[in-house]
Amino acid sequence: MHLTLDIPDEMAQWLTANGQNPSCAAVEALAIERYRSGALTASQARRRLGFETRYELDGFLKSHNVWEHAYDIEDLEHHRETLRLLRAQGRLKTA
Image (cartoon, rainbow, N blue to C red; front, side, top):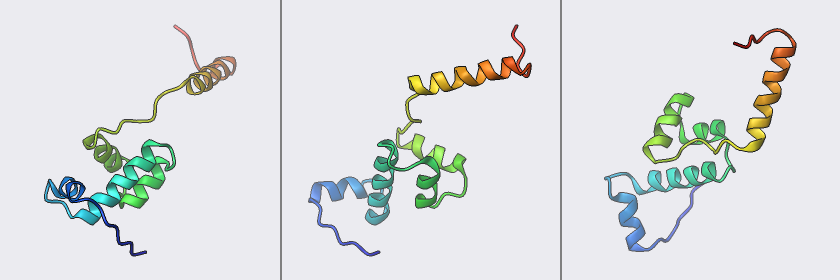
């Protein structure tokens, strides 16, 4: 898809500040924001940005000060349940 977008001159300067192609910078900014908001998974973001590995995506995101989604209470509960099941199955030894 080809999209023409009119943006303020100041914003265009932001996009080209590092000598980057403005179209690439705009696509990256959109992908970053969609990932940050949870609208894109890491796998989707990786594919849309053209990275072959998750490692490449992680480096890209960190270079743009984007960190993994916050670890929330649901994650904690899921991990606690997994640990409980592993212990019950004798697959996890406690110290």
